[in-house]
Amino acid sequence: MVVSIKRKIKDSFLSEGNSGKNMSDGGARVRPCKGMGGMTALYRKEMSDHIRSKRFLIVLGLILLTSCASIYGALTSLSDAIASDASCIFLKLFTLSGSSIPSFTSFIALLGPFVGLSLGFDAINSERSEGTLNRLVAQPVYRDAVINGKFLAGATIIFIMVFSMGLIAGAVGLLATGVPPAAEEAGRVLVLLFFTSVYICFWLALSILCSVLCRHAATSAMIVIALWIFFALFMTLVVSIVANALYPMGQTASAGQILDNYSCQMSLNRLSPYYLYSEAVSTIMNPMVRSTNIILPQQLSGAITGYLSLGQSCLLVWPHLTGLLALTAVVFAASYISFMKREIRSR
View 1: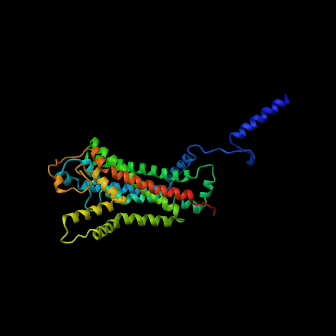
View 2: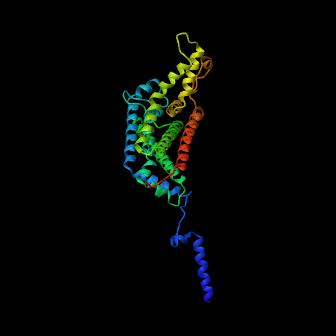
View 3: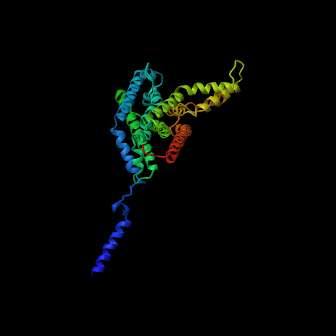
């Protein structure tokens, strides 16, 4: 009888040990993190940190303020635009600019990188400098769950922020004009918001890459800001200089040389995410745009003027979306590889 009781106790002890007890730690149970190696827990933690941070509230307030200001500027010039063309009134709220206020799309193209910068420039190096990164990777979680959770949490915040901003701007414009949008107009606005989210996610991935490579948050922030200013302001100037050097534009330049120069400028400019986004949203928000490439006069002969459907406009900007997604994937892959290979030591 005593032998059978001892055997049952031994079997139960062994079964508990096989299910997760660590004998070297005094029998303490080591609970493996659930949800893709702990990424779910890290994702929720990063989401909570973003939402509760003052930085997020400041950025959200700035974006909402600029979007409402752009809608106000569009409303001031809407009557003149309707007098010349009364179609697509709802889309004009996002593309028209006031006398001193840029349009909604121009604001987002310029300030969108700031959102991604603010969410990711200190994602890794701040925890490294505070000494919490080595304690984090010492937990029973996969190492790649750290950077994956940070990027996915930031991307979720970006999508929520952009779509909330678009809905608020659309609601303000709807209340001001009293003209409800058609189904296709609403679809174009949704495509615009999706493009905007992907565009900002690229800058989030770039800021995370700089956060992995740089030890100090200020250094990574300065690098991303420098790239932001270069792509937004100086990229066009550099491309123009390169194109003019390759295909000179003199007074005796032929039509072929002019075409080659313009084609070179367009191809080089499309290496910039700022140009890709601006060209894509201008095509989506204007149904009259029928091509994103150079149109020759002989191609216009016999063409019937009219509006493109939403599906046809999406086909025009599909390469732009693919380019933005590819840039985001490449930059995040670089940050992922760098983080996985980097040695994490205590301070």
